[in-house]
Image (tube, rainbow, N blue to C red):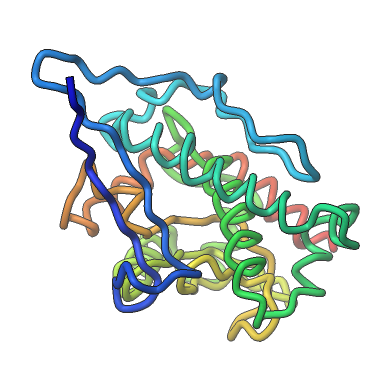
Length: 253
């Protein structure tokens, strides 16, 4: 019995599948008519041995439904994130970077090295993203982070509106971020492709504390063209305790 395949191509440059270095191509097998699609388990996914490990999801792929469906989570975590992790470890194997903390690698990163730039960002960004997800997220942050959001944006609702607007306006593939800058102020920004605010030459430098993946692979199977709805639903599954922890660590530095 032959199987067809759904070929998903996500491009960082003009949505073209012809751009080699910053293009993701993932084949997702489709079942025959009489077969049922089976979803695996995140604990069965493991990267090859290397300097960096994947974040272990504390829930099953279907735990975030209906905000994120199980198939999207399996593809995103078990294919994209796994690939970035393996590629990064392969690229830095036997180099000076293999023994450095990832923040130090970002400081030393040559931005013209497209392979390392893409996979280093892909690994770090996805780790932050998956750490942020929670099956039953809190409605909004508390304590220190809540006070900082009110100070810098006026209210949580105004922050949320700004974050959603920045995420929606990110043209093509990329990320939306809540960042603690060097002065300790919170800012909302976006970056293209797998770039992030820790990389050299970014318009806003700072420590990312919240990340939203707006590459098509993060939402298209469940939302198709409704990217705005995906962005809004993200706030239903945010682990604000984790975001608050990152914020408090950032302001201590």
